[in-house]
Length: 571
Image (cartoon, rainbow, N blue to C red; front, side, top):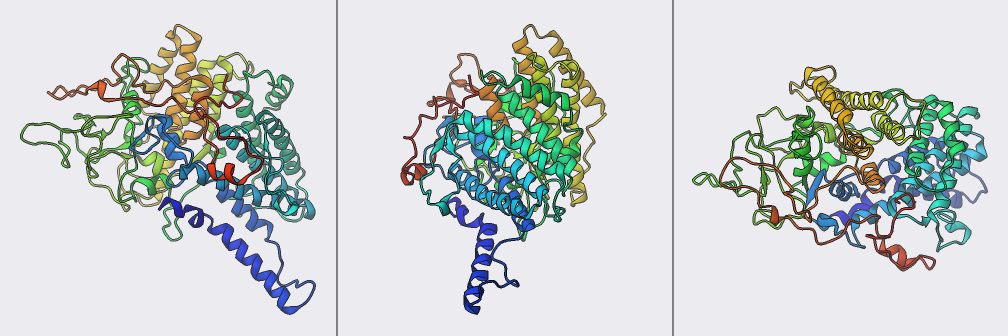
């Protein structure tokens, strides 16, 4: 089914192509030089919307690499090849991302060309910022990629060269500034409104996004010798960044089914006939406060918003539990909550059993699914609204970026790291409340507590702050910041993948360690057997280039070793 994605998910591109073909055919039929009633170019508004649909799909779930990245950042587990970091060169999810990057880039370049010619510079500036975002993401995934010669088929370039990573990033920083200047000019008769799916034509928000995104990129390259101190200082002095969750850069979703507009992670789980990815026991134990290394004894109030348990507490898994003996026959099952899943790298006898009515689902926050009210129930495509945005770069994530920069001594004008960490955590809880509110408006009738300002949240934040204060080393403090960022951005694994490669945090499940990997103890006769988790592949620090690209592009490099080929900021 996933092989069909190249056709299914390019319906917007196909529609524009057919429309253009129709216009050209009409022109030929009438045998005139110009038919003003049938233009041969798409309007700027249609182009902008199309580019944003493309930008909002790359690294999403369902048919894109979000499923892989969720496993690589240990918020999900899987029976697929990406378990144990085994993603192969011909993986269709990676191929879909690569195709979407360059299909979208082609439309962005068309938008850049047409808006430049028409003088509609707000459109031009937005297109430039989209290009910057998309190309930075592509470098972060693959490293060297076609850039300067990409999308130039009409000029005769059929085999674009792969540009060096650092050179692409250097141009991205310039592109962001050009985009800002064009947006600020407000020049041109045409201005985006509803055709702008991200900010509805709000140029102030676009400028705040540009600056916040640029700070994020500076943070990613902060350890490289090419770090531009002067440019960084100028950006900080400008001090025009995200100010609230209203500035979040995200692709919004609705409950609409035809055309399908629900959250892709929702479709991959609630609306699927069988599971492909599962909820990570490692992530679960950290949220429960069970991990002996981080947040020990500090349960996270978001756990019911992140996981929905089909099983009620104390109920044996009906698919495979033995009611006579009490044996759960489960790869991972917490009797006290009903959490049921499989472990990363599991070789246990219960890993591959069919237990569709027992597995824990992703919660309301990531997918627009269900809040875990403890009542359980078998989930279907009608069990939630699917109204949850695909969060690409949000206010709370930006605050964690600032906290990291303060902690490592790069940012000295944004207050203390303790205050920034607290601000970031509060914004993360507020984001959960915002998604819940969207679901309530869209038809979710559950009684769902508000997190912000609650006793549980206040206690949690105070406990994490105490843990941070007592941390013995700067590295431990950084680990706490990055772990909270990892938790707060649950469902947005791309930046988590980048953060782990840059900093080594958060600490991920490791079957190769000699100490027990999981801490769960149900107090029964069937404890977890730690030796039944293995890891036969090293961590992949970049994606393979799609083999189809290497086969068809005469200027492509030879295939990389994804376990050793690093992105240039990964030192």
